Amino acid sequence: MRRDMRDFGSGRLLALCRSSIGLLGGIGVVLMMLTVLTDAVLRFAVSSPLAGSMEYVSFWYMVAIAFFGFALAERYGEHIDAPLIFDRLPAQLRREFVVVGKVLFLIVLISMAWWGWEEALRQYAVGERGGAAGVAIWPARFFVPIGATACAIEVIVNIFSRTGSGTADRDSTGR
Image (cartoon, rainbow, N blue to C red):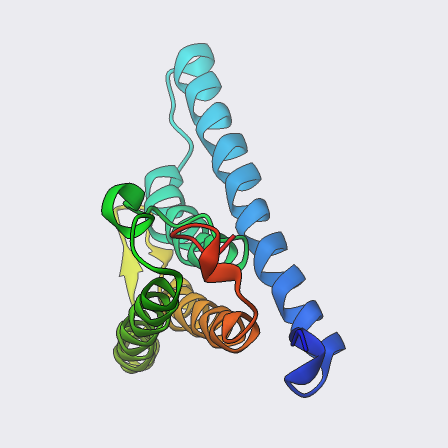
């Protein structure tokens, strides 16, 4: 019997979280494009850059895009893989490697979420600001633990939805 996200508590809550992470990453892309465009136009038109644009792009938008993107890549099986040898292995061994790899990835993600949370709390306590514009960057520090946690949830869902479903028979990504 195929398991899916409804098997993991409230399927609606998980779906809402998944959609929200995707939306936040997409908003980060749009905001980064608009900020860079506005900065370039202002530099060219009036010889005055947009204050804080570098801080927003590097500390806010890029972090959101990367860490929320990890969860989306896991959700859709789009992480980089090396199928040259893996796809030649017997199906059972491929399934075992996929599960072991996912568990190791899960350990890394949980570590990133844990230490990222601690660092975000430290930066919150000091009110971290960056650059000459004094942009508050401590709120963006929470993107790391949120994104790592979202990706960890996707890994857990994938481990349980793929175990016994035969999807590792197809290729190295489990698709």
